[in-house]
Length: 290
Image 1 (cartoon, rainbow, N blue to C red):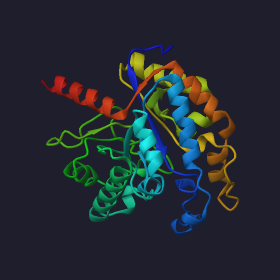
Image 2 (cartoon, rainbow, N blue to C red):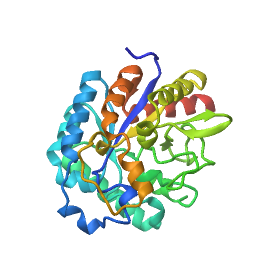
Image 3 (tube, rainbow, N blue to C red):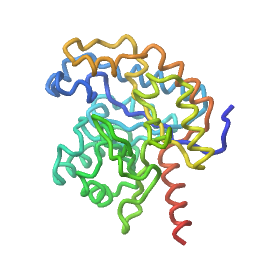
Image 4 (tube, rainbow, N blue to C red):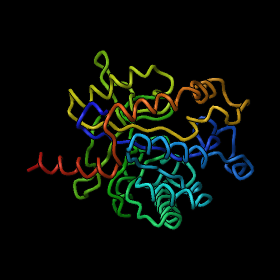
């Protein structure tokens, strides 16, 4: 039984084991088609887990994955979940100029919509890579009709992070309805700490995430934004032996424990799709401005 009436945002970044940032320097994109794809089986397990808990979520899909897994996209949609964009092939936003970014998000959205038959209105940047280097990214998202983004990690991190960004939902453009939903952080010892899922959830004790979400829900009275990846519930995935030790530790630690922790989490709190969270946060901002 969920312990709070606040509905938190539940999301899945749909990419396969070889498409992650940790391996981007040792596995070339040109190799992807020759590698064993495991994303479909892992997503089906996630759909079963969500159905068991009677929760709905948002699946941020790589266009590359959608193009090759049309039936899976329709399966996600038929189960009542939201499909949103994760870009086409996991290139980070700050590696593009605005024209290249515009082409990437347009292409990815069209592929996902063609595969699923569902309109795409949400976006998450690969590796939370919207930051102070990409002021044009929100303008392009708004001009292409996206209603929300969840692309900011408001912390300092060696792979990503925009430490100065707001912790909670904000409107990055005064003339647009576009809302940004940063991934969750908590306050520990007066400092922001990452607490929104992914490797932090998988590596740290479950009690830390439960404490952090409670802090956000009870003290801040705001929804948490949580994410994870399908490969994180797959302990049998291939090992990339030539990746740096730090990358391998981050990627493979506690894969065998992840599904059990997720099952506990989705039963413990109230969860919903990210488009629902965006709508409520947009209404909140309007009320505060009135």
